[in-house]
Length: 100
Image (cartoon, rainbow, N blue to C red; front, side, top):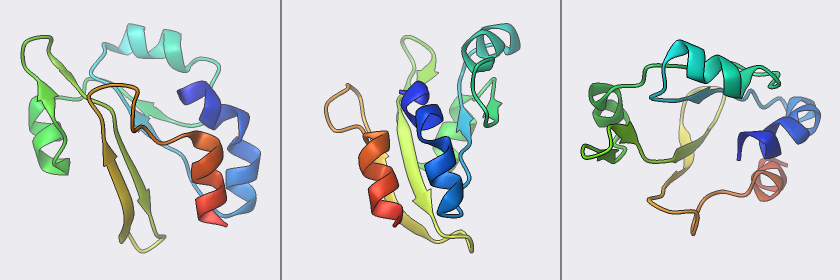
C-alpha cells in the first residue's frame, strides 16, 4: 500500500499534500520497508498511540490495523478510514483524486 503512495508522491506534492506513515514495527523492520519511500515512516506505534487516533489495535498480534486520514493543512479531518482487511482501504490513486 505504501508503494502506491510513493508512486504518486509527486502528484500529491503538486497538490500541497504531505505524506506520513506509521508502523508498530521495530526501527529495523520499518527501515527495511521505508528505505525506498520518499516520505517519513514512524516506527514503534503502540496501543496508546492507536487509542489516541481512535484506531483498532489487534492485541492478539500486537499491531495497529490500517488507519488512513486525510487532513487539511490546519489539521481538520476530511476523511478517516479504519480497516481490518484490504477491503475498504483507501486506494492511493483515488485519494490523490480526492485531494484535487
